[in-house]
Image 1 (cartoon, rainbow over the protein chains, first blue to last red):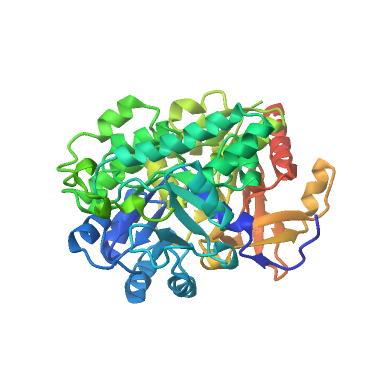
Image 2 (image 1 turned 120 degrees about the vertical axis):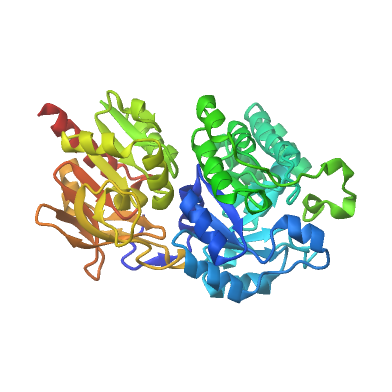
Length: 299
Length: 197
């Protein structure tokens, strides 16, 4: 290895590395400094700074954009844990603004209204790491090919319904299991079929997992939901509307943090799930129209 | 030899992988009962506030302090270093075992994270003191060390980024993210010495 006498910033190892430090943790959506502090005290590993949580974005309608920088700075000033923020799919300039603000991670997110229906942001040219949503292995590897340093399931944000997150997690993990048994010639065809770069399919097969950290997101509302996602093989969870749209956010946040660490201990899960008050009101995903399905944004 | 890796949150898997490659038996430590028969403990990188909150809730702080005081070696990387420190400049649950003052997120935010090669003369003990490739991620640094603490590595500007206090070891960077196993072997030497006593 060449000797680095001087510091080198924004490298792949540094960007993917931050995601590795978040493993086994919970990333919580917050809309102000007070919520951010509650999240940090409850044990969140990071917060996602937003103007509205996904459930409110759904209710509000219209075009959902990057949050006001003032809001993001307020939240950055309130906590010592990493702060993430969302830009629209393909919105290069929103991403540049978020990087200039100094956010620790950018979520190029289908929860906001897409800005480009052809291309996602070229994430390689940024020093700040990106996380992107995916519904299956092909989509996950396409995002990694564009420079994503972390992948999350899309799920169906703002519904409090875990079914889509489970579907996406199973699709990704299941495909990784299937390629373990494929020969090289099958792998070339499979890579073409799922629209992913062959090199990344090969690397994923060798590792037995994605080359970057994989979190669950979209509809997680209870400690049991979080533990279920860990059992399915996720490295950690995002909780969006599930915490601050529930009756007792601090208690629920804390319980979800404990459920992610102790997902293998049903007695602990039973204990932390007691008396959490009302969870967020849920939505049956089957009753949403195609236009209301956030997961169908991006490709 | 059995090495425990604190598995409350963070990059504990990466430490397990390095140790297993070195042929060492590892244990995932999430509850006090998992500490039984452990000869040494690694506290991985992650978020120190999360690790502190969970360690306190699940009763790990007292048993860890007792075992460390009885001579069990502990090595903390990044968040693990913060968790070992006596002084972190703000109220958060820590073990408070090492006589060091640590500054969290000392280099800044994620865009200030970096890689650099460090001179670490102490690694000669594991046979090879060529520069060590160090990865700093939202890393802390050591602002001050007590009389019993030895600084093992410094940045070009003199900032202390690795230190040892007898059987306690702290690094602001992440040896578990590279293929270089020397720091892990250095810690295993400390564990071996401690168990001979």
